[in-house]
Length: 116
Image 1 (cartoon, helix red, strand yellow):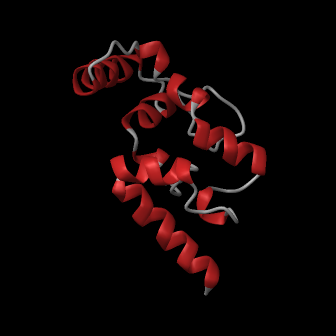
Image 2 (cartoon, one colour):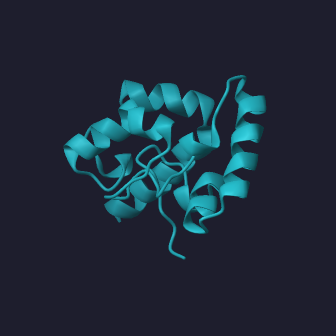
Image 3 (spheres, helix red, strand yellow):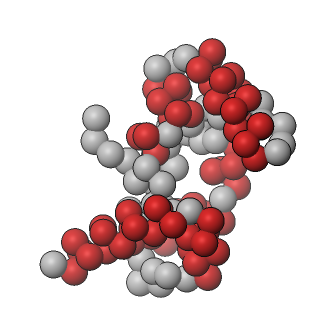
């Protein structure tokens, strides 16, 4: 399977919610929801985790992704992901990268390859 990189730099195809959705595995989604609820201190329902990937043209998208400002911006600008954006490194991304530095590494690599 080819990697799907979200607008923010997360790898959708490595996400357990994405994998469970592609496998039509409701039990796995319930486990993901329980794990994320414990990790992030909230109540996440399995139905909120169905996801075809952030950059997929057709949903479902996780409830968080459907509301994500980074995703909305990427969709509006029509970019493959934020590495392809002329405003790369914007405040939205900087705030996200502070929490998820691996996403920055992914997008920096893509951006570097675009310049080559």
